[in-house]
Length: 531
Image (cartoon, rainbow, N blue to C red; front, side, top):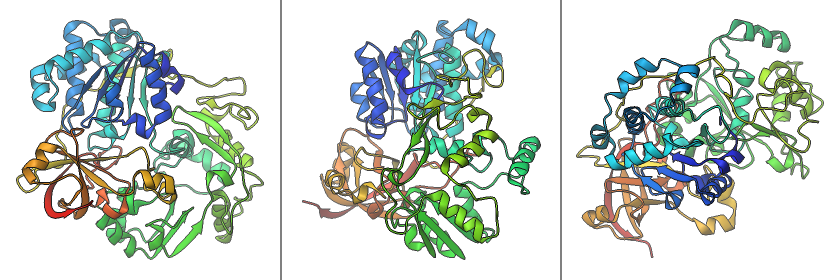
């Protein structure tokens, strides 16, 4: 996040898109609703009428995969009306003239045709956000899990820069991380192209710094993303896989392909706190521990680094993840993993990571610190880009609209999108063993618009078959106007009716994220009604 979660309370316009915030990020949603109580205008743009949409001053549904078009459409209106922040554009940005040319292609009439958002709604949204003194954008994986995910995010950044809603309190472009400590995992180099603190593996000076610290030879070539790993298995280039805290047998697209690939491995090691669907396929399972059984730090979605303290002794043979990794490294002959404590590991990391250099266990004993924090005197950074962008001037990118990778057809006439619900967390590794949460949401369902259900002669609670080009599942129907005609929604949590059997592996060419939010399917009546 460019800004902090508490700042949302003082925004006077909040644009939420691709985020079912009240269910997936309830604490952040609370901040948004507090802002609304103070008079902020809440705009929600989502293909589905989510829970937070019920609180919106303006709620519109865009057609799946049309985000670049509606964002360009808003900016077209802002420019035509003269609502852009001319001073910010002149002083803080570059590339605006070329960018303006692309916006000419998105008049409201054309955008309405592409996205389904009316001209009047587009204008109301554009005016509310552009005229806000402190406008915030909040988004999640409904924006990123597309072949145009990177372009969607760049478009939102264009919108923020055009209106000057960045580099100040209670503004910004704010992605909400999908799971606990995802931000921390990325900060620690849990991405294939960077070391800690987003330092590029291909940068010679950075690579040498880490080689000296670790007394090892390091590749300058970025590694593989998850989807690329499975492609590598199919091609025979990848023989072994070590999976920690991830359950691709539920969370990844085209699950039949995932299972086939995992079964081809010569060695599959899974390290987790429960025997997940993926762990059941493993040659070796290593028992990790929960958050309550280990020391360390978590980094929140707004870059806040916080202490985690062990509440109980690890149960049974389970060990903290770093101890398992260190034990394996030592058995492989390394003498670099002899750490006396988690704090010692943290100190090594901060020494090598400029944005973390001023953070110590002592400084975050009681309260977290937000990076960048570059020295012991640095209080941390509440919001980013205050005086200038990290690269100097912010660049406008002219981004044309591209259609999704898969389209509806006569054979597959329905659009499918997937997402989360409030009672379950990711692949239900933890929430699935909680009786109280299971009671609230015991099984999967597919949301179908009642008019579509009438045409298909499907009743509430009836079990139906959903078929895509990848596979098929049987699932209970839930009739609701939360989805438009022609659109279906399935929560992805449930392995028994796994939505990702249906999804495809088309990737964003830059971020390599699969297009989980758009696919084409058909629904078949099988006649079984659940009572």
